[in-house]
Amino acid sequence: MMSRRRILGIDPGSRVTGFGVIDVVGQQRLYVSSGCIRTPQGASLADRIKVIVEHLFEVIDTYQPDEAAVEQVFVNVNPAATLMLGQARGAAVTALVIRSLPVAEYTALQVKQSVVGHGKAPKEQVQAMIVRLLSLSGTPQSDAADALAVALAHANHSHSAVAAFTRQGLRIKGGRLA
Amino acid sequence: MMSRRRILGIDPGSRVTGFGVIDVVGQQRLYVSSGCIRTPQGASLADRIKVIVEHLFEVIDTYQPDEAAVEQVFVNVNPAATLMLGQARGAAVTALVIRSLPVAEYTALQVKQSVVGHGKAPKEQVQAMIVRLLSLSGTPQSDAADALAVALAHANHSHSAVAAFTRQGLRIKGGRLA
Image (tube, rainbow over all chains, first blue to last red; front, side, top):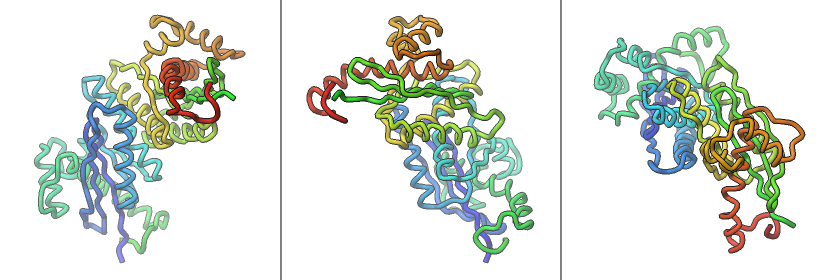
């Protein structure tokens, strides 16, 4: 039996937080779930954060990921928008930390390089690659696709490091080595 | 017996998050506790957030406040600093929301107006007023003082509304009315 790693990818945003769950089994990448968490506009900060955290807890408790990866957000020139983005990102990472998930961070450039092979790929090319890599029957919504992309980047990035650890017997979880 | 409201004030920052706990008993404002949560510089976002959330949970579980008030942060001109501030603020509010505390927000202007009587008061005057209002024997550290100030602002701001509620019997908690 091959070991399985389940990765939760998160693309935080002030209005929409995308999430994507994939399984890594050997060289295979398997789609598990993805979706978007929309925060109620005009609501208080506490109410918006409540929506993000409750939905993320539901996703984590349902799919039981082993690790999480978060996209490093674009720093907007508008300070108020940047603050809101930071708050949403802080809330999402807090939910991951409270559920004791290790959290890795990737820039948009790293995600594109990992998924498509070069950092200047347009959004459509990233989405097409996700559809192909995960054998999806349709294109996921944009924020969900970005979350799946960061999960895939983490799967590729951490593969060799994790393989090295497991070979040394430092990290064996859920069966024999892949 | 007078009813008691315990308020947790928070002053979030990217490096230091101040907290202050006060009791409101009738017209009295009583100091309970205050302090600073310092986030490890150079650590990952997840590790910094973990420090903020674990300390805030400890404060909440120890002092059992009924309500929380958070200072609306200064939006910095530096986008990276603003993002970090937003993340710290998002983490702090997430901790409050997870512990089911109602969260009120006040601008620095509202805090100064409430505590000192006018919005242009210098920091030192706010601190001196806190020492006087709470009969402190020394001046608390700057971030802790700001957190006590936002707690005091919430006590003053919400007093009349809460008094109206309690008079109508809608909110009676912990004994007879003040």
